[in-house]
Image (cartoon, rainbow over all chains, first blue to last red; front, side, top):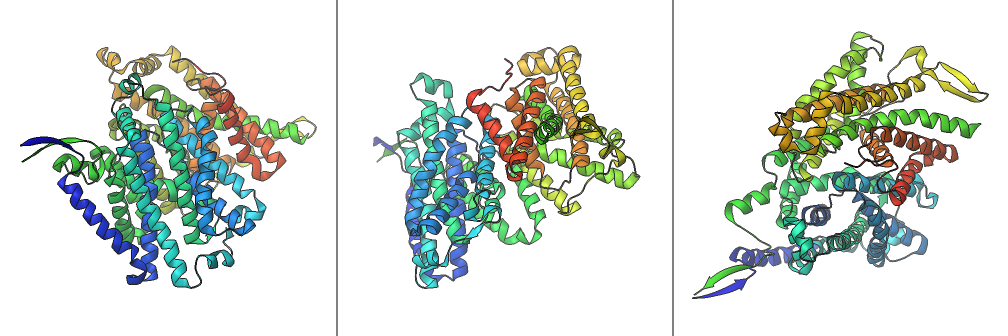
Length: 334
Length: 287
């Protein structure tokens, strides 16, 4: 019998195989699903990606931002500008929007990082409002009433409706799965180790030489860039966009926070589970309109008071299950 | 004259922003809690006053004798039943709970009162004014609003530093455990602070409702104005919130004078400038 160090568990290996099978099925969705299914799955991927990124910010880095809609809207508006004013191919505009958002996030972070805790949260929200109000001032992009992507731009995505829908869907899939993979890889890296150390004991981490501010800064900028790419995708899906829709705190931040809280903050599985539950709730309760939103708010409060670690945190503590293990464990091998 | 007028009106509106901010500053000072639903509570105060005025025919300002106590009791219960269970080292639980409350309040108000905007009618007081200079006239109502907010802040300041309740607030804020040993139940101290905060919120809600139209979704904007006033003035300084509110009001007034689309934006820019050059606010208080 020998002892060895392992990162994987039986559950994680099974989960890995299931994940590959599911991913293969999802890639093939345009051939087995209707356009409605494709759009629903695409929207699912958008929320899963936003939730995964917000969870990285708040759950691992302690940066509770209520202003991520700033980057969703920023990405959308960069895509519109490049497509409309320069005639760019939208798929080329997506990475450019990501880089632009990462660049703009640098001065923004320098400002909002001066605020602590909950004040940081509201500070990020003010920044998002500034972005929204500025976009509403740009007449060539439709001002306050918004603008549609030109038909020629949509044509660049594919000649037939099938290929257009499929291209947008695959992009959503790539960003959704990509966000989870990037966050997973990041958390298994040195940065992830630093983040976990900071989360567990900030003072001890500083004494061990972890440069907290630098790590936080880098994560904020990375998340901003990726969030803006998701914003581009939202724009491609919706085609028409206004400042109020692109910078909506409810759509792009509040719902995302609820997803993460319900699923389990500070875990990789949490945002995925939370997104599934959010879509199930929406499917069954959306007809209730504002009452549905009140139920969502009450559910988030109840979870925060009764099971602050969310559904996945509960499962993890109860059964010791981990589908995306980031730590090391000693196992005995026969 | 337009500019002087814009600045004067901005100063007076600043009084209202200071009222938004005073409640935030108070509960942050006592328990390090930032209530994201603060703005929605202000709007809920407006609707409460509207309902009372429509049921009883009282003058909106007279309705305060009912609105303020109801709000204070509500604040006490809210703190005891919900917020006290979320307070700890982690800032996330209170933040998320108040975010949930915000969504519930907005949609609850929408459900009960529809999306139509409403206003409280304070009669002749609303239009009465006197001329300060040729072309610059000051309304009686904005002046009353400003004077009230100065009085409220003076009252809070006195309460905080001269009364036994204020001593309890400061003691609990400085060291919860030691205060507990001295016989102060920190849960009750927090509840008293929230009750006081909600009383100020109710007053702000009634002023807001007389001054302009209100609808179920204007809470977040009021939260942001209050928050900006707190940061501009300097955390933990009650008189600073008044100065912060006035600066915000004047910035918005000047912005609106340039272009109506710049009103709110100019306020945000003033806030970001203060954050860039005086990150601790203009009048920070050590704590």
